[in-house]
Image (tube, rainbow, N blue to C red; front, side, top):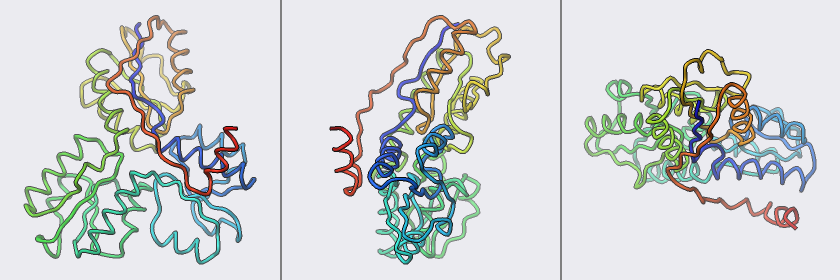
Length: 314
């Protein structure tokens, strides 16, 4: 059985930055450091940060007065910022810069009088944070069917943005439906789906040409990991989302000549190594990287942590 590794896979620049922010905050300010929502959607990452002193909460009411709170990579609503400032909490923002880009587009279009549409999945933290940027005239659509039933006040003054971790193909269909129903709708100058999401999807598409089954490493609540699994299935290859080797069903590998491995943008490489070792123990022989592009993106740290990073490197 051959083992093919998708490249790129795993951590993206936004996830690297978010994890660095928590670790550097712990070094600079000491434990505990409070983090609103999971910093990234990875049980492995969250558990490792808990051991180091991070305390994960869902609401600011769980953060004691005078403490430091980190906002997760998914971003938060304006009301969360306002509450944290009102209570005098020290805020460190780990929102992915690509999510901030979407927030900026939303606020600009709202200021210009546009009625807004967000393409995304209800209940996802990024979607909640983006919808929370403006108080009204904001519609969420998750499918072509949602577009058909959408009721707007002024079809002449509409704009849309997208959740960054959607499937490229899924998003394209919805965008097409929006343009067909509302010919004058305005979209972002560049696709809001992030570079890492698209690169990982392209790598999985390449895997589907070479393998009999695909294992996507990622936690169940990771949107981009779920999209990778769905993409593999859509391309006709049985695909499974696993959080670790404990989730692998050996029956998936029976009679398989080639297996592909990918990992969502919040899944650490150590989990990939563990899965490769598992497959080698179950008949895997050759391990080969399937590269579609090399990533070299880096995002700057918040200014209050740059000095802490320099001390750590020294």
